Amino acid sequence: GEDVEQSLFLSVREGDSSVINCTYTDSSSTYLYWYKQEPGAGLQLLTYIFSNMDMKQDQRLTVLLNKKDKHLSLRIADTQTGDSAIYFCAESTGSGNTGKLIFGQGTTLQVKP
Amino acid sequence: KAGVTQTPRYLIKTRGQQVTLSCSPISGHRSVSWYQQTPGQGLQFLFEYFSETQRNKGNFPGRFSGRQFSNSRSEMNVSTLELGDSALYLCASSLGGDSPLHFGNGTRLTVT
Image (tube, rainbow over all chains, first blue to last red; front, side):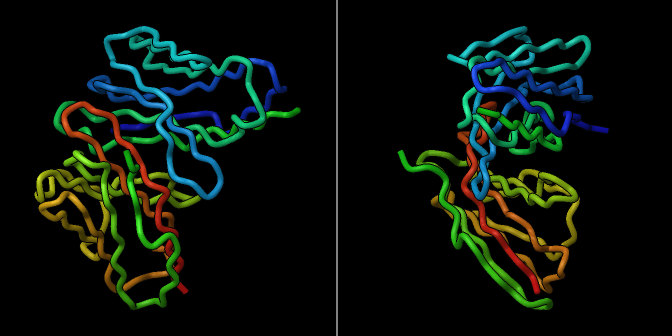
């Protein structure tokens, strides 16, 4: 069945790069997403990548997709304390099901000053 | 452009009661999806509406229902509340097609 896996916790120093990893199982996924959740808030869309792309860069964020291994990563350059949050990877479940995303458990990013 | 608006932000109900949550999507968005977020189960898909029709449904009991109005606003209803229904309920909207989902800040439901 559909499943998305993420490591649960990552701790980095301010100014370092953070890399959050995700694996998924549905090979028919059309889009893969990264969302950020701060305490008491909803999900903020950070970036997304179409399944026929290998990489997408958006300011400090770089998404890498290895479709063969079904592996997705989010790199945050020059990580700041304001980046401390939970990061969720999600996959769409194919064309026509775009309202239904399968989410990972979330990775808590702790940024130490 | 205003984001996805969910009301109320917090709600406390008693077991056995029913509750209605409301969601106003981003202007122009016709698809509205609902998710339940709990510490144990994470984020789980409830259902999706598009042009007033339920397009997709997750694995939740029939106590969970929803609807969408002609202005794309959506409501979800939970009847006969159980303690396990305590969760953050998130609404998301999109243009439909392959456009990404944008989430609201959620309604925190506590069942006592």
